[in-house]
Length: 282
Length: 332
Image: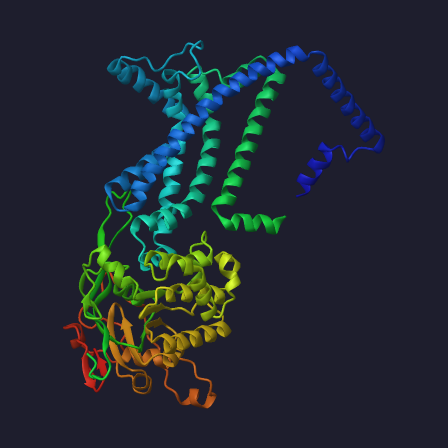
């Protein structure tokens, strides 16, 4: 505790004499003013840089959204198949897939996927899926598929696990037994009482999956030469280009903020208890 | 089973068994797992008369709730028969069962878990009315309000969610929901054990009022013997998946014959300290055996204070030792 407090005061320069604090603050204001002046006078250069970052951002978002959609969709299917029949062979397969998916690092998955596409799938279907040329369109499925599969593995594994456990909890809950005892047809029990209650944890798991994919983006983009924010960040760091790096990091931060807000709004609609807890907090 | 021929039998259970397959975890992904059978309910015979309350008592894990679920066909019976109002329920098709479901309802122990957290209580009560088309659509709202009033709640509450109510109010909502289909028979699965003592009395009184008003029949599952004594006409005592004693409540409480019933009743606290001094308490030793591998012969013999070596040889059958008093013990 003492260490934390000392660190904080040192960082904020509150352990320094008042004059020293004043000097530090003025210096900080001066530096910020210089940066603002630089930003305003070199607007076109900054604009070019921002456009470049924007394009990288678009590329990464397309890749991320596709991978999360692919992984979550597959995860939901696998999770439902296993969760509805817990002792079936599909449940064993789903558990194995999610277990391996969570434990395998992205670079290893990327190498396996690359090998599978180059060695087996491409010769079989006659299409080159792993293209290392940066000139190909961002929406070209041939380029997107392999990195998207790699990034989809962890969302698939995580969403599968959460779907299985949530389904198990809801299916055997008393309110679902009550729904059966009311005489509701099984499809209505599933849609009204099971799926709506599973939606909340699954939505949260998809949100977390997005961060899993985001954390693997750097390695995957580098391996597949995908010119998105991950690859651009690596380049910016190697060139000591702090400005581009900060734009890229801010764009990632804003994306996380937007996604979190979106999920929070969706959760309020899915579960009335969320809205109630927000009301209590506010 | 009962020799009281004046009352009409509403529900009859014959040789009912509910077994579950469970498996050990295995080393990984179920490899090396061993499948075992839990004999939750194992050969139960019961009769419940129209308009009566049958109390079902026993220790936790003895199969009381599973028996209730199997009677309502919420769990699949392994073998045996459940005959409701002359109709056998085991093996009925879904659409055939739907008509019977209207007549049989359940009240769970935990009212909060029995209500869908995402559904307003008005919708929860109205849902079975829509499914079974009990009242015309334009009268559903009025019926919901009427049901809420019947259980002592303000009809204004209908647009609220379950988490906005106290435990006692939630249990009233669960009762209103059960009443919505105009049932004849309700399984009350420990309906008061999750509530405060003051609220327990309110719910018990409400159940009794509703029984008088609508002519309901209850299977009242509980481990609280005082409550069972208060509400029940007859009592069945269950141990490790089997009924070991069944009698009129006065008879069972004044003269329990099975050693397990005697031990259970001796554990009920008494208010009068002088009476408590004179009373002989029977403390059972050891844990309840696993329903996966129950003891041979009499299931209670491993904890029975009067067990004999011969108790391990054969299973004691439930037999009528005096009028309306049935016991499953070799030594009685």
